[in-house]
Image (cartoon, rainbow, N blue to C red; front, side):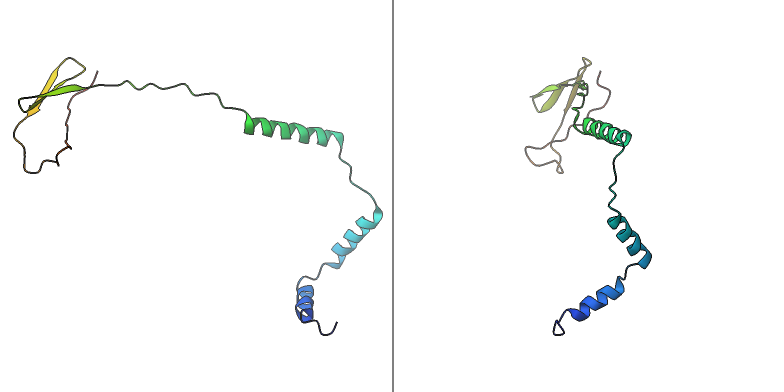
Length: 119
């Protein structure tokens, strides 16, 4: 296999990642010893309980949050002879109007300013 074009790369990789001789001896010793690790019953039970708790936390359906109902304020108004008349929730009436300004919004759009507090 002297003609293998990857031999030089293989040799460079082996030299760069040369294993520690003591670590290699420990791995070989452990493999040849034939001993297998056994789980202790306490560790197995603890792992099973932890797994069940993690699954319960991840998949338990959340309690529905109580619905928050925002108090709604509804305004009703009408145009009367070029004036906007709006009945406010506190029983008062707001009247606004006047001639159209030059910088007014396009038709179909408008600006309404409301002062005071809705109760």
